[in-house]
Image 1 (cartoon, rainbow, N blue to C red):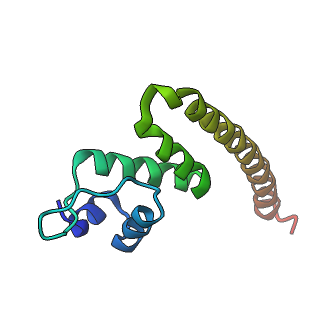
Image 2: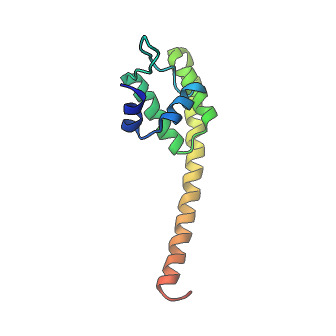
Image 3: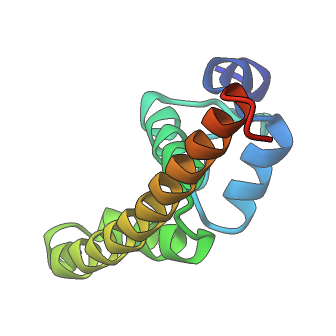
Length: 117
């Protein structure tokens, strides 16, 4: 699959895919003999993983660390787990902040609906 098709399938721009590959956020994409990217299922899976966690606010640096360790297998299991646990903790904190803001927003909306503003 070429980059245009992969981009459409994943909902990620081709430029973003190229950038992710260039900075090591995803492993190098398989290429044809003429040098054109030829996306395999593993490439798409890696991009989906990165897309999901970037959307959730996981830092590029943490994802690069994780994605660099992942192909090394069992020897890096604990290091990868540590990264995931740290990112989970940060995500829970962000979620709590969002829940608090949502509660406040709902309260403000109710004031408007009740004519208090």
